[in-house]
Image (cartoon, helix red, strand yellow):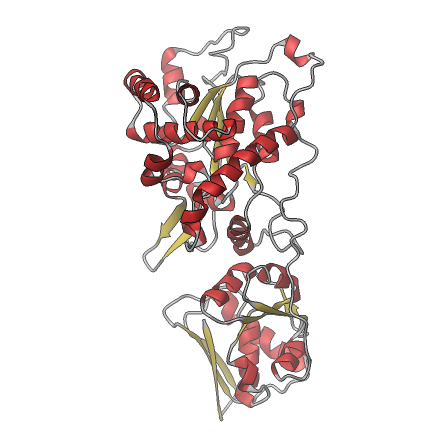
Length: 495
């Protein structure tokens, strides 16, 4: 965006043009008060502020600082030497303080992509903006400090990112040590974490589905800097980046309530500028508990982002694309009462009730979930067992090893690509990569062919089964996909 100011002799007036929203229009009083209280003269002229391009709606308070600087530049107070190659962003308080804004990280990326290397940001946003390489970030506390730097009257040390908290262990208070029994479920979750695969857990109430889901983030692999920046940008735009942090400390884990709307899941609403839960889960986990209780329309909007890794929201005037490369984790009961598969409790649901309950989830959505796993009730002997279960740290070590293999496999293809198009996990593979890296032997081909015939697997389910088999082979440390890897992958489609 370009901010232009014209000062014309005449009766004082202040007009903003260029499709400003209410927040931008209201900035007039903030800017004039900030100029006066910072010791600068307010021009008694006709002030015209133009925000270009004029056909794009301008929103938010981030235009305060550039408009104030443009007014001072039009008066000749600011030298044009540094101003010509500098971007500015910030909200002004009435006393001239520069307050933080949303999206500073994305703004810094845009500055880099536009070929410019300097951006003036509020001091509270400077760490996240400084994460982007090739961008000089100048943190300012107030308007007077920004003007002094632009006039070369003072030097400000550029901000440096603080990456010490990135990749912190997620929630030390939860661990897979707490999960008793459920060995096959733990194995399925390990496979899902290693390859970024979507999972559906089906079991009676109290079988540990939610407990296991909450511990999945503790075994997720360390993310790359590209992944961390991409995910943190979404949270920065939404205003959810932790205060004082450069990036998110770990992969996000989002668990919306089943009353969430379509707009709440994918973003948008009347004015589609904020990301939804699928984008806030970018390179993390989206957990949908009690899956059939979600609205059918809300679940159906997940189909496109699950397939494409992004979501596009279109309106009459414009469209916006948000990243949405997330791992979907779902949990549900087998029937309305929940005890259809529980040998210890009687299910009182009729077959039509069970069918209606399960039909709330469409076939196309189930087809996009790689792993379907049955979660039975935990027996008393398993609950009281004194045998120590495997910790999250031990599982995470194996997941990290498999993820390292995947990074090495895809590193050559990722070089030179934009971050949004890179392949980091087996679940990201396209048809050509599947053909190259998921070749099967004769016995494995025969096995998966029989599975497609007997289970009625679609072409999409076939591709996803191959991806899961590739991840199982990576966990085993083998270059080729063996028959036992394919058999285990098929098992995860059999519920």
